[in-house]
Length: 51
Figure 1 (cartoon, rainbow, N blue to C red):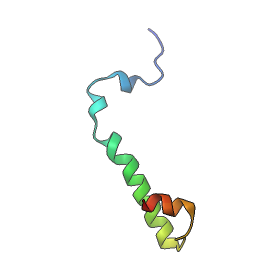
Figure 2: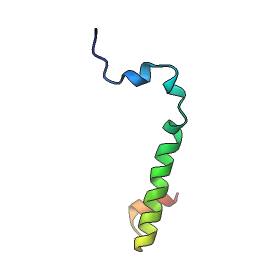
Figure 3: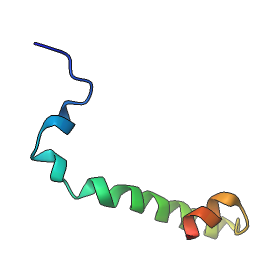
Figure 4: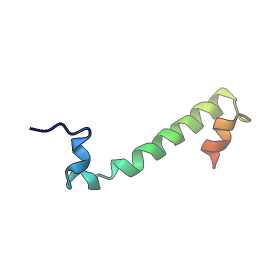
């Protein structure tokens, strides 16, 4: 039995999981709302999330 660093990527059925696309977008949206709520509207992170 050989070691595989990330075996889930070798599994064809799990490579089509929609969450691989939606999860990062959700995290950026959460960061945007957290920064906006705290009043940090001029930081570089806020500007990146806004784009």
